Image (cartoon, rainbow, N blue to C red; front, side, top):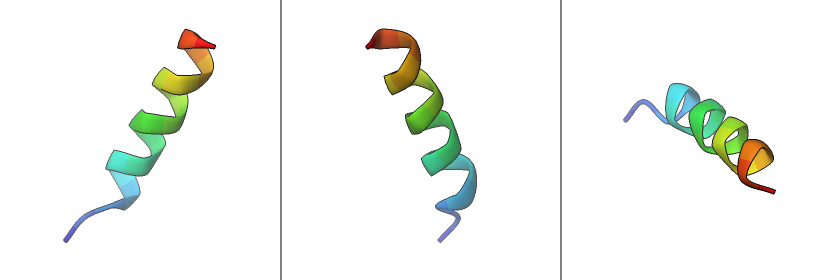
Length: 18
């Protein structure tokens, strides 16, 4: 379960989308 890279990508995309 590697959620570290996933969380990073998610937060990054969310910030860009906001």
